[in-house]
Image (cartoon, rainbow, N blue to C red; front, side, top):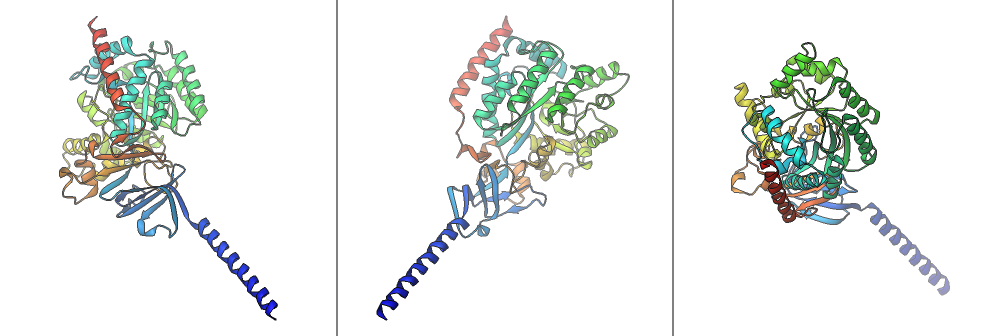
Length: 472
């Protein structure tokens, strides 16, 4: 009997141990695992309901957002390799700069207070002809990307030369980018003919089309610099690979006059429509010279439009019909243009300017609200680049592209309305940390993927080269 009792006790012990082991194993499996967990702060999601979450939490795994909500909603069991406190900060989607010429940061301030054609033909084109090479492009790209990241930009759309070098520098810096080699009907620094540039573009697309950060594009310069035949070749290449088609469009009266004289009285948007240029992935920068019926063409063709208020103002190119675009619910984002015509890459200034410019121009203080301006720099900016399913808002399943903003400064005090504060009071210097695809590229105001001092020294050396080249 004693032996039987001992045998039962031993069996019970094994059963208890087995149950305990199973329970522990289930507990381990049930634990929610994050690469990074951000706790605290106020989250501005820009999701379809425009949810704002106080005392929030964001869980990131494999470069994606896998949890977002109030921190009380976190699972009981969690494991995170890194936990970041965001108390006293606002967490926003990464800003989206929809139109840049990123290496032109090296031409910042070279020629100012001129109209578009004089600025281009007498200063910018000659300076580029004498100075733009791959070394120039890499140095300017590093400078531009450092500025973008410091200001909270996580995605930019670019059109320039040596675009493969821009892609390489963007990838090293860890920033997301839509990049297109400029296709133009006169000799460029890297490709002397349109045919060469088109071949370069196809090779560029094949090289980068599967990259997690770089989205290759086809980028014919404009209707006044690219023939109808070549515009259609660019369109065909875009459609072949299903990549974005980026173009300057309706950006000045001189463009409208030229196109109308050449193409039987058709205005730029009408002309592109007449030749069947637009694809479902077209991105059009500026769009100032646009009537209501032309906006309806762009809306019908699903064209993304990028508004560049400060560059347009500085070159006196005109004021884009943004309130009408908003009424039509067009794909409308914000861009800075190149730093040679702006003179910075600061999306916070563009938001502030976009909201105020259209108020005074329309004489309507309700035109372009703060929330609409902020949306143009985030989720609507993603829509303009046809990437709204991937980025632009903080939602489960989207890229972990996010920014932490300090709101404790004097100029941020007091705070009544968050959208108003972000658009009318926040500065680029208020950005403290930037994450792109789950990777911190700036943390506590320190750039992690770029050497800021080396970049500035290199830029000064190029300034001296540029000045010398133009004096000869």
